[in-house]
Length: 209
Image (cartoon, rainbow, N blue to C red; front, top):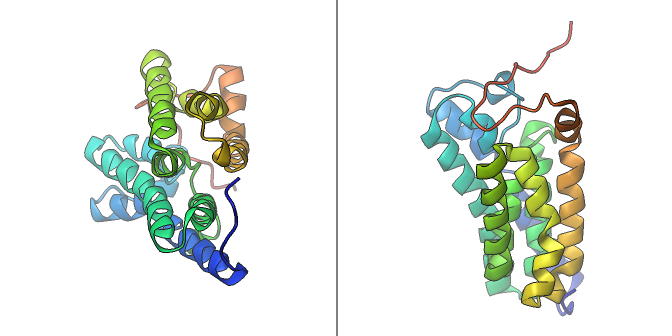
């Protein structure tokens, strides 16, 4: 963990900044702007790039991926430039939480992998690139975005040891646990052999009776 040199008020401000930035639902915004409909009614109902891709619009999915990753990176880099490393980690964590639980969407957000990778790149570019490479390798090899995400998040603790980023250990463990919690349904579908692969159509989420 980094040394905490800032006051509680400054860290709270960094947390609020990170959360509000992270809670911007870029997937929903892009889908609406590009006339793709409401993501809640498409595929898994998720607001992330993988579900945007199920609309068949690759450009929209790319924009979503870059913006969701970018908000994590911006939260870290801006907080680091203004307040230092302790605030950067707090802002990064809260940006991730903002994506998972955005106030604008009734705290029903995405699964956070793009934001995870973005803030990792900003915290330590070597660790971030290694996590991105791990995700890409397994995504191309197995074609399951969820499994690639789980593997990339799980590999984080290995990469911080390889690249000597010990001060990011605690944050990385917390983020990894959250990634796994958000992918519980995906894990169950992987075990059952019903998890859709990248680009594959998925039945629209049930809205109940």
